[in-house]
Image 1 (cartoon, rainbow, N blue to C red):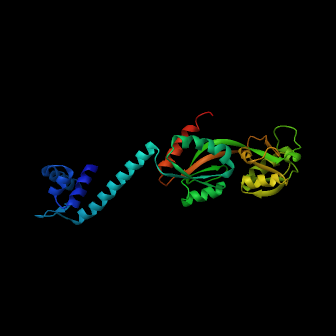
Image 2: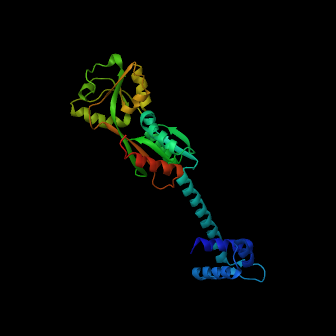
Amino acid sequence: MELRQLEYFVTVVQQGSILQAANTLNLSQPPLSVAMKQLEQELGTPLFYRGPRRIQLTAAGERFYQRAQDILALSEDTRREISAYAQGQAGVLRLGAVSSSAASLLYPRLFRFAAQHPKIRYQIDEGNTFEQLNKLAAGLVEAAIVRTPFHDPSVHVLKLDADPLAVVMRSELDCFPQDQISIRQLKDQPLIYYRRFAALLGEECEKEGFLPSPRCLNDDARTSIQWAQAGLGLAIVPYSAAGFIDLSTMHVKPLDCPRLVTQTCLIWPKKRPLSAPTALLIDFLTQDSKVEV
């Protein structure tokens, strides 16, 4: 069965006769009649009651007419979507992003993507990783930039950047002489960090013979940084979050621990069709992540 046959059939039904349909399609009547008979033979059932004036559909013909319209509409939608995909002219990209990566990791790449696709518009929805997972599940965003650790088997994951954890503190609280801070140096320090880093950080501290002393547990890098800016402790955040920090009063030093690294990822649902802008972004980031910058 071909789309051309479906187009012929729908036109015959809409015009009410083979002759009128042939005129509409710029065909002669005999080839169109043959095409309809071949379609009935292929389906194994009559589709028309052929009267002297107007044709009438059989019950099978009525059902097939609805299906043929659906198939032709889907075909047209697909054609438009692929054309938009190729041309980068496909409306709005609804993207979630963890706020802590927005300044230094997401936007340089997003700016390059936007330059290549100037007709795409954007709706950026910021929030922490778990908020983004919830929004993705609810269909409020089509894809999201998030951070590890997280576990969600319902999404595809494209890893983008490794981002080590760092210590952020007021300059007067910086009692560490080196450019990096070891886990051992965190002992007895008032620490501020994400709840989801607690288990991993605790494991690393326990290896050094102590348990961390959290002054504040929270779910967002901006909260941790605000507490550190108030002089209430040392914030442990992804190093890229330094883009939010006034370095005239604050110091940022990476943690010297290979395991304390978070990964920035693009995620999108496994069982939901993608819009053209989202598909374009996934393709772009897939290729861009292979390029050394």
